[in-house]
Amino acid sequence: MRYEAPTTSSEAAALLAAETGEAFVLAGGTDLLVRMKNLMVEPELVVDVKRIDAMRSIEATTDGGFRIGAAVPGIEVGEHEALGRAWPGVVEAVQLIGSDQIQGRCTIAGNVCNASPAADTTPALIAADAQVEIVGPKGRRTLPVASVATGPGKTSLAKGELVEAILLPPRPAHSGDAYLRFTPRTEMDIAVVGAAVSLTLKDGVITAARVALGAIAPTAIEVEAAAAAIIGSKLDDGAIAALVAACSAACKPIDDKRGTIEYRTEVAGVLAKRAAMIAFERAGGSR
Amino acid sequence: MSGVLVTTTINGDAVQFACPEEETLLDALRDRVGLLGVKEGCGTGDCGACSITLDGRLVCSCLVLAAEAEGREIGTVEGLVEGGKLHPLQESFISHAALQCGICTPGFLVAAKSLLDRNPDPTETEIRYALAGNLCRCTGYDKIVRAVQNAAKEMRTAKSA
Image (cartoon, rainbow over all chains, first blue to last red; front, side, top):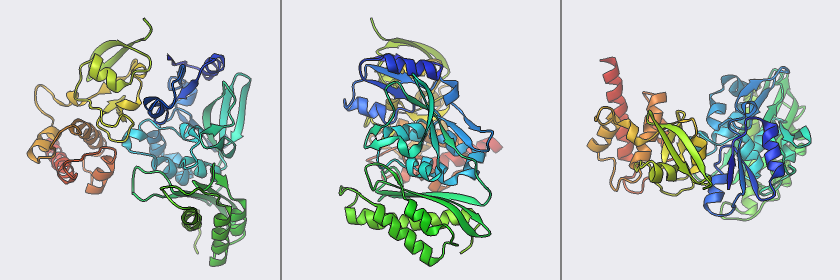
């Protein structure tokens, strides 16, 4: 195995593009090193991106959004006060990942690119309408987070491409987001279902909303019908019932040791309802 | 020979070692540097027995490549002792019998110190969350939590004295 720690994204992309064997990006390493240990992968090349300045910080962007570098660990996301005020749902999704030890290493970009259907940050980022900024041999492009994972462990990134940053859009006044997941334990567990809601209010009425679910399909999904169910409402009981029904209808889960199809389908609606109520309250709404 | 030469700082001392590219920092600390306080439990980031600090952040050394340590600052349980004197957390673990077999203890000590560095007066709940990444199959955790509470109290008293 070769280990490289380039200092620019284009150098990293060139290394990945030129490698004929199995090549991996190393950000936090909390997934990659486990797979190496278990011999699920035997890389020819590992490209450590933590020495690339453009990937190491959280910046407020000129449009009022945020740019989170792909090598920023979870603990730094949790410590960023302005980010936490603007996007509390995204930050709580990050903080749900693993222990303090894992938080010291794990990255949002890694969570998204690992492409687990149960990734915690992905639904929160989809609800937030986040994009990933990708660098590759042919230059730069941006892609909605929902378009990164194409199935369990699979992404739409081409050979030589890597994520440089996560982009969160500017936040209008009276907006709120929330992410909830269900796990049998309080800590250190993988989501049975995850639900994220982001919404904006005007005069107490929801004018914009996005709803996303995790662990109920091969990838996290946006549920447009659930958002449509609450837009134009003050999150009254009728709107909530329609949101719950739309979320359950969108579920295409598997049966496994963490939950049955029926259970996940039911819980998706319950979690989306609770997340919507938290997001609504954070936006300043009252029911 | 292929491999990497790593120059790093461990518990304040400059250290240099050579190792294969795929070697974890856990293995390098144990087998190349001889710091046997760093334990391997699961090797997959679940148990926390290999906890160290890397540039001041608590991490599992089994999930770090040794090559990544180039130019970084590493802290291990061996660094808790100052001038031959055990750290208050170590004294407290002994006086509270917060260990039985002992393999998880270095990881708990490093994680507990990382918590107290950030938060000198944690609640019981904060301690339990902060130590959620460290597994102990002997003690049932209660004595560990009490030992950390006691050490925190003693360290606050010593600081204000």
